[in-house]
Image (cartoon, rainbow, N blue to C red; front, side, top):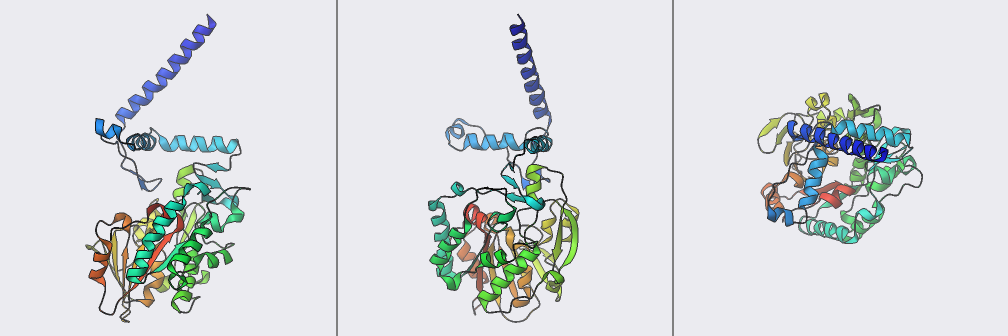
Length: 373
């Protein structure tokens, strides 16, 4: 009798939980964007018999349920503190590193040789057609290895970079890995976010300067200016852990001359920094006003040099450092661009030609780098 009562009680509790969450789900409207995670949330996939039979329908629906789960942020926080109590060193794809660092996890088996080859083949075309320079930035797990939990596995980006250099040739390859390793004890990555900091980008500039034959050391830690504190980035949002925020810095030298910056062919500004983001969750959006499909920068330096950058968000805090070297800088993010890349580039190429730079972090390169010729 007691067993029957226990079973009945369990059924009632489970049914009640299902009813409560179902009702809450029906009442709560789907969210389009997460301010906490700074990303677009998955939408409910349209149902049809044909859609159901497609392989990716269940994956899309699972992603929708995960993103739209009632009080998702609170449940993430609860899970995080339970994992901490159990002394877990990785939560939701994020390593809990030493010195307050959250480091995004990328496992050795996450990226296949076929995937690497396909992305490198796309680079080969850009190098062949446009004489492009290639700048792939390693992520924190490959540089801040002393901050990782003991024996934590990570995807070896050095072997990817060696492959890229072998394919495109050293005359097209910008070695950022070495310079970042030399400065690994400095604040070159954010503690709560996956991006490199302005100081990290400054060392990236030194690698670029060596590649182009220019003088390095133009930007140093003493040249930076603080613009915001309390930045909690995408990695903190994944674990929802109460922790100290990062600081946002920039280099005032990049604003020595007046600029004309045009976003997506329509919005004009006189700066490549957008201070309004500093009052939001997405403080990294301060650089180049977050992500746009296309940005045009007229620098005020009449040297007749033009640069075309194909990039991910790692480039946002790096591109301003190049302003003194070019009269015009065009910035294209393939993730937000719909069109034929080479045809589009031809429209902006001056008679004297232009420099072309591909700038991604290694993981975004493997996951997101794509274009239509």
